[in-house]
Length: 528
Ligand code: ADP
Image 1: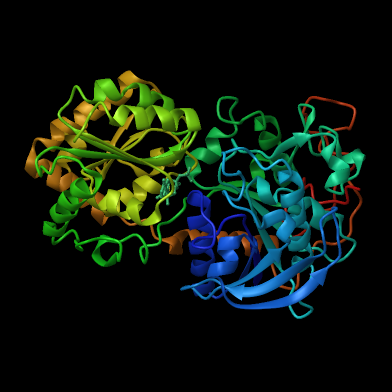
Image 2: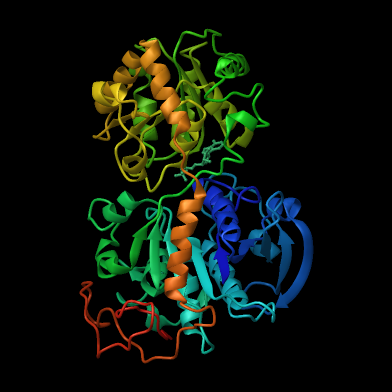
């Protein structure tokens, strides 16, 4: 089966968060399961610099007002997976992150940048770039690729089914109505049944609306996004499609995240040999200018500095955290005002608070290796890879019981500690008091060394490999394309909602034809 995996981030070519880790590891696991997986990524400067075996394979005409662009076939370093880089220098050859300029503002032409990316990915999927390769299934990820299911649906050719994975529903790719001609879409799509979202164009909505299957990155988040509290205004549409939604827990790539063979650590360690962990803690304390003291609990907060990660709560609770005998090491970037709050606070707690603002992959590994505890509060958490990595490094996570954290972290109580199944500490309410209570519980157990070792060892021994997730994605692909030659046949259009009605109410016009492997109310259709 040929799978086209399309993502705006793939580690190590581009990374701002967990999406990059997933886009690197899941395709590898699928390949190990016998699939032919190829990836597509914008040709950011770093991607061009790091990718190997680069070869220009196509020059494509201007589709959305950009200059002619090139498609470069290349390979991802280390894994050797094939990747097509979409090379449009006027769109992607920029400093900053894939989405933001150096001042942390959205690139003003993000709609055009990611519409172009999806258009080229659609051409690749349909066999228009490499005549010898077309996709049997297209796997799109997050809002950056939200137009892809729609664009494939518009093709008059045989169309592969699309699966759309929501890694984070809060980032939706919202743009003004006026962007439609810029991204080459007809105004007829600007309806509640199309891509309109409260007066704006939503790329995320397009992905949900026009894909054949939807996944999210944990079973609990799959349930939560159906509610008004976590649905980010898309819970109505998501409920209409609930039969097509699956929650598949992300895995951990233990070839990268394992203290037994991590090249970024000063000393290796493992569950059977914890001496190295102490050395890593001492080394981290020295590197960060913290007082070198093996006994004081070292808490790490490694995170994007955003509302999602309760960065405001952490920043404003620092003085209360330091009423306890702890050290805190902060590594993160994000909201500039909160970054400044953390920087300013560092001066007040010399030797106890270390703040590093910025994105530092190697330092992230050393933080986890040196930490006793990982503080990882979230208002919502689709999966939460960092706590899973932390567990492997013996940094016991303190998390909010939400999303993927509910599926992965076993809270420590007297009972779970006694039976040896506790792997972390969880709190319910997204506020400072709940966080501090949880921290106090953790510190109380930290003081009981033999129980603490058991919690740490259990956390380190838990495995969240990618093989299981890859199996589940594979069976979903097979369900969508039961034989690899299967493509979605031409069929009359159907609507999820009549164009004139604003409320999202399920209504099917006529009986839709059944397509093997697809839900009867599958929305794949011509939309122009
Ligand atoms: P999210 O995708 O919501 O940001 P995850 O915990 O799932 O959260 O994934 C975050 C990923 O980004 C992890 O690989 C984590 O180590 C990494 N990360 C986050 N902030 C930084 C940073 N400042 N420097 C280096 N790595 C970071």
